Length: 374
Ligand SMILES: Cc1cc2nc3c(=O)[nH]c(=O)nc-3n(C[C@H](O)[C@H](O)[C@H](O)COP(=O)(O)OP(=O)(O)OC[C@H]3O[C@@H](n4cnc5c(N)ncnc54)[C@H](O)[C@@H]3O)c2cc1C
Image 1 (cartoon, rainbow, N blue to C red):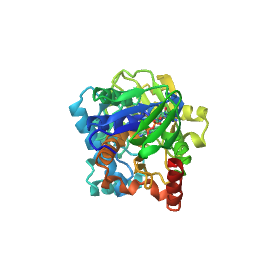
Image 2 (image 1 turned 90 degrees about the vertical axis):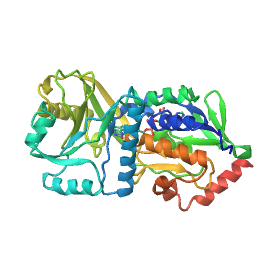
Image 3 (image 1 turned 30 degrees about the horizontal axis):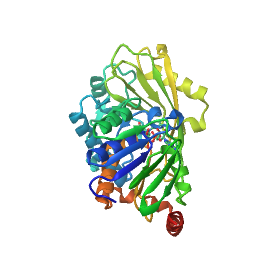
Image 4 (image 1 turned 90 degrees about the horizontal axis):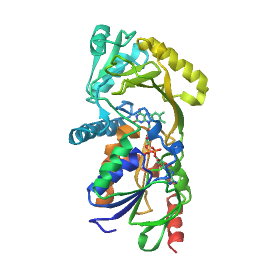
């Protein structure tokens, strides 16, 4: 593969494909991003957009997220118009008796946070109704506007020469002569020195044809966007099994937890529980209208951890599928760009290699590659 300016095709223009396009194009790669432009297959458009480091029980994953939060900060300093903000969060979405223990876990991992009692919460977010007795205030957490953030990365990638092809559905990928990838799309075939699959919930389908397994535990989710509220709720609020944040135009984006969500309840039941929760925590919350009900599917590899990086035995084929892609996008995009440009593995990504699901299939992947090159 040419080291200076490899030709990279990225399948998928959600937040992960878009961020990767930006970092790759900036590093000098010739990038083409292909997207079928089918919003039902976009987790990014259906996302809550919370930039956070949760899951302190898994240190590798936690540190990955924390590093990405720092990159978001740096990006927003470089590009103040990016649709992101860092109001911090107030989190009491846990058993009241375990808040101290949870807080200690975060502190041990050097997460910027403090324990706050009711009067401090009232100072931090004066309009929050029914504040809890105790919560964790996480200083550095932020939100990215899910409707605009991937588009913003595509605009930046284009400024560095990347080409974006919408309404372009990839049907199959194959390895051709000289280890170049052939990407068979709706009306055109693209050729690439390196191929990066960022097709969200559709990534496993593209991999299956190559003999690669990516088992999933995708979760359906539902969010609501409300009519504008005429007061400010200054923080991202994470109450038991319910979270919301306020956009700059006053509207709220609200949702329930990842666990369960739409998989265990009907849409009507979820909507009425969201109405009830909004009226509990937001002044005049019962008067808010739902402007939009947003349904989506979280791309979740079977063990809940991201799958990202080069696919062993299929040189120059890279993959990125994960939940928490909004949080992780800058770190994943920049790490993949490093891996592709330097053609050497990125230490950050090692624990998240797809080989954890393919221990027994490595040989058959190699076989598939040989068969296709023949
Ligand atoms: C309800 C909900 C709430 C969430 N909340 C958060 C949160 O608060 N914080 C957080 O960090 N994450 C959150 N997530 C997860 C986050 O949104 C995803 O991890 C992230 O959007 C994944 O981005 P992606 O680019 O990998 O995939 P996607 O955004 O799904 O993009 C994949 C793209 O690939 C395209 N595509 C698919 N197949 C093909 C094909 N064959 N050819 C061409 N194009 C194709 C699709 O059109 C799509 O644009 C949430 C997700 C949901 C659904």
